[in-house]
Image 1 (cartoon, one colour):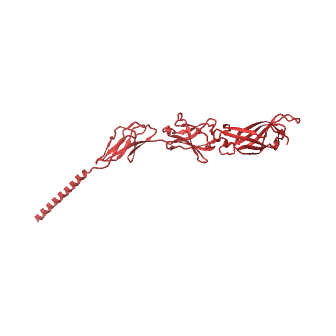
Image 2 (cartoon, one colour):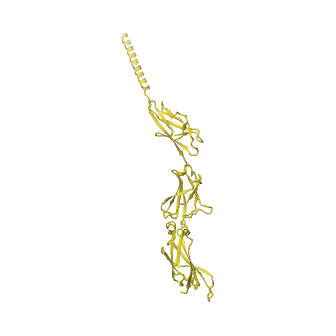
Length: 361
């Protein structure tokens, strides 16, 4: 019985010894394995301007630092860096480095493997805000050829390089887009002086949408009506076929005309075949029936036109001026404004005429 007990004791001692040896061996083997982790876990910058603490975003091998545009970028930074367990980083956490995209960090894992990270500063700038446009104290009317130039008013216009600031226009009725130039020397963060572009056949009157972009950031827009050019921006030739001949009430008169301009016809297109009305100014002369020597203006009837001629009829309302002579013939043309395509201004094409006597029918 005593022998059996001693054998059991010896067996237990052997088993415990084997177990201890096995655990000891496993622990030693585990502790000799080198960890392969070489990650930047956290990268923060503190104490610059109004920014008390700024954590970078780690994206792949980039350390992206999103910087508020209200605070100038510092020349150097002293970031606090947390890396994987057992890893080291160079330059070290808290070391002063240049704040630029040329600055890199190398993280070395326990097993000697490395990973390189590159610093990237991303300035967070607000989107430009467009409040209004301003032409002059006389009103906010824009017109082709004669301008005037105008100003865009708002905020955050110059939060980047001026070369990245662009002003755009779009004709609403068909989506045609074009660029505006602006004076970079006098532009501010709240006001940009804009120049009207050169007038071409591609341009047209009507409602336009204007906005600006600062880098990739696009502002809201303002809608502006741009009027057609004045007729004084073209050369006009008019001649009355019946010049110097007696004419009668109810007779049809013919005026030959030609409109040209220095814009490849871009101005003339608004006035060719676009006559709304014609009128005749008749100078009376003293006669035996007591006709006074005044003048009268009567509106012609039956007006028609082609791209080279205008025809109209002398109205019977001119009967009181029989015996006088027609000394002026004028035409009025359409000048669409905003949502009124039939608006007519006092644009007149005047043809002085002498010697054309209005006789009895």
